[in-house]
Each structure stands twice: as structure tokens, then as C-alpha cells.
Image 1: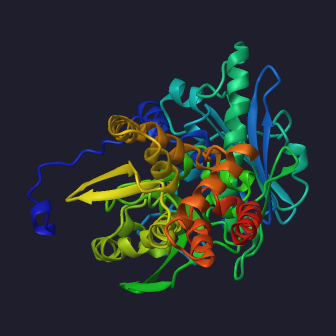
Image 2: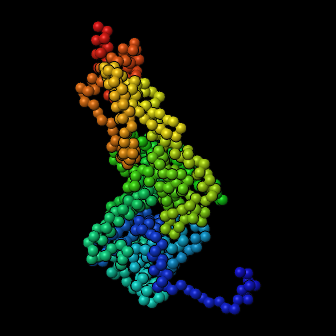
Image 3: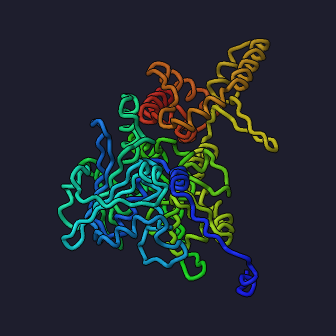
Amino acid sequence: MATDDLKAVLRRERVPPRASLLIESMRDIGYSLQTAVSDVIDNSITAGARNIELLADTTSDVPAIGLIDDGSGMSESELLEAMRPGTRSPLEDRPDHDLGRFGLGLKTASFSQCRRLTVVTRKAGITSCAAWDLDTVAETDEWYVEFPDSTAGTPWADRLQQDGTLVVWEKLDRLVDPRNEADRRNLVRQIDETASHLELVFHRFLAGEPGLKRVSIFLNGRRLKPFDPFHSRHLATTFGDEEVFRLGDGEIRIQPVTLPHHKKVTADEWNRYAGPEGYIKNQGFYLYREKRLIIHGTWFNLARQSELTKLSRVRIDMPNGMDAEWKIDVKKASAQPPAPVRDRLRRIIEVIGAGSRRAYTSRGRKLVSDNRLPVWTRSQDKNQISYGLNPDHPAFSHFSNTLGDEQKREFARLLDLIASTIPIDTFFADVSSHPESVSTRMLDEEAFAGLVTQTYLTLKSGDLSDDDVRLMMSSAEPFRSNWKAAEEAISVLARGNEG
């Protein structure tokens, strides 16, 4: 509305939001305990903290959660401003490495988990304390922040001896009913899950990568360890070229990564990097804002999560000046790529997944190209792929040659029956969820020796040289997996054949 039009308005009324109603609505933005704690830690890191401790009292009659840091702390006036809902505009330029966004995080994150938020802070030797109590707001229907005359009674307040800030959550009505033992156990589980979440979200700060000051985070005295979702230090991890994409005045950095095949890592490593939801759910883009993980395990609806690309992950680094373009939400737990970036990601997504596909299909291509003695055949007719048993394999052909005509036909029908009943769905499910547990059944020594003899003699009957026989058998299972024993048996057979 133009200024001249305002003069034509009959009157204007102030319609401030009712404190008791709005503050309750602010509790339901959608935080989990994990995202709420992460949001408060953002403030600690922005304040220059090098040590942050998550404190949890789950055994007392009044459970509480606290976060204490050794950052710069606040004066009383700065504390009052920090307690104000919406203390900074999201459109305001922020310094580099500022992890804040809306000026709402401390309040909305805290209110989502508790009814009483207390902040004790110390700066230049002066301690200040302020609290939001939602019961007081509900009773007065006013935006009253309380300033206690003492920190006595505030959990962990005595630990703040130097500059820094303590955030305490009490009246944990969204987390636990102190009278319910099952609730208490659930709270302990949630806190443990929050610790794992912090190890992922802040892994670059915990590791102290080049250009980033190391930050230590503790849970009740236990130091958290960084969890690098790219397994960067493993020699079998493959990194693609980093691409710099300019958007306005900022730069977005994109780097694809392919995790190691399960044959190249230990079982513990394979399970750890799968994460609780598995490799398929954790593939995709990992978006970092000022080195802090915002969202992960998504292709932004540009591709499907599939078995063949489950080892594909791509790191995207964005500065904090692109929050509006990426539609970063209040919780800093969701985002949408801007249209130009989205178009670029769509064009390179095949490249991103190619490395993972190679990790899983290279073995298959090698068997197809090198195996001169296949037990199984693979056929493709248009879009249909089928598998069958190879009737020309020496083990099958030798046995078939001992049969009469009708028995040969019965044997051929038996091979077709076996091939037509392969439990493909079960096999795919097992390989998708637990590939390290899927293996072929091993033959005992007697059966293996008999198969070596039978195969060798059948191939030799076709006037093949010993070198050709060795080459064919060394490329095929089960000989290839136990080639030393197979070669020794072939040498004995060759000497006997010469005699």
C-alpha cells in the first residue's frame, strides 16, 4: 500500500499476538530432541566455544538437560536480546561461520522440549541469568522474561566459573513423565541417539579439518567422536573432482564420493557407515551450511534411491548468505536447492552414481568377459533379463553323456526347473540389506577334488592343451576361489595323463 493510500485508511489497530497462545504454537514447529540440541550448539560455536558439554540428569525426581560452553558469554543486555523471540532478521547479512539463521533457534528449540528455559551466562567476570517459564506466560498472557536474583537452584550453574553460557531445560513435559520408568528409559535412549546425531552433524568441527577450529563436544563427560559419512580416510573411498558453482555473490562447492565396496572394508566398518537406516537410505546429497550438516540422504527428488547407487554420496558446501535461496527452515533440518543448482545437479547426477555402479557391477562384467567356464548364463531379451544353467558346462555335459536319450531329456528339464525357481526376490533382499553375510556354499574336499578331476578330464577330451584347461578353470568358480588346491590337483592329473 502506497503512502498516499495510508492517509485514506480510517484507522489502524495494533493486533499483538496473544503471548499464551503463540508461545504454545511455537512449541510445535517440528523439532526433535536431536535437532533442538543441535540448534543450541550452533549458538555455542558461533560464540567461539571450543568445548561444549551436553548434560543430562535422567535419574532425579525433576529430570533436566543442560548445555554449557566456554564461548564469549553475554552481558545482561545481550542476554535479554538473546531471549527475545526473533532477535535478528533472517535477511540480515551474517559474518562468515555464523551458524544462526532466524534469531529464533534458542527459544523455539528449547520450548519444543521443555516448559522452563534458563540461561546463565558469564562475561568479563559478571554473571547474568534469565528464564522463560511457559507456565508464567500462560498465567499472565504477557511476554515476561524472568531475571532471578540468584542462580541457586539452577542445575549445573556452579560449573560456569569462566566466560561462557549455560542453557538449562526443565519441566521436560515433551520428553518424560518422571513417574513413568519407561519414559525415563526412553529419555536415556533419545539422549544417546542425540549424541550420535551430533557426531554426524558437527563431524567437521569435531575433526578440526583445515581452516576450521576444532570443537570438542561431550555427553556427561564422554567425548564425542566425529562420524565422517564419506569414510574419507579409507584408501578405497573414491573422490570425484570438486566443482565450484557460482550463484550470485556466493560459491557452492560440489564433490561426489563413492564409498568402498563391502569386500574392501571390515564388517564393523561396513555396519558403521551403513548407519541405522542402511546404505540405501543414506545415499544422496549431504548439504553443509558453513561446514555444519543441514540435510543428508536425499536426492532432492532428482533420482531414486536404488541398490546400484547406494554407495554414492555427494558433499555440497554452501555459505550462510544463501539461506533464502536454499529455503533453509527454522530447525536447519531441511532445504531445497535453488533452480540453477537443481538444474546442474540433475545433469551431473548420473556421474555421481557412476562410481557406485562400477563398484557393484565391475565384478559382474569381469565374470562375463573372463569366465570361459560359466555354470550360469545370463540372457537379455529387450528389457527382460533371465538366468539359466549352462548345459555345456563339463560337470553337466559329462553327467548327461552317461544317460540314455529319455534320461537326457529329463535331466534337461531338471536344469530348466532349477533355473526357473531361483529365489530372486529373497536373494535381492539379502544382498540389499546384508551383502557381507551373503556367500556361496563351499564344497567339501572330496566333492571339490572330484569336480576338479571330472572337469579336467572332460576338457582334455576335447583336445585342449593343459594351458587352455588351466586358463578356463582358473576363471570359473568354484576353482578360482580355491585355485591353489585346484592347480595342485590339475598338476597331478597332468602328470598322470602324460604317463
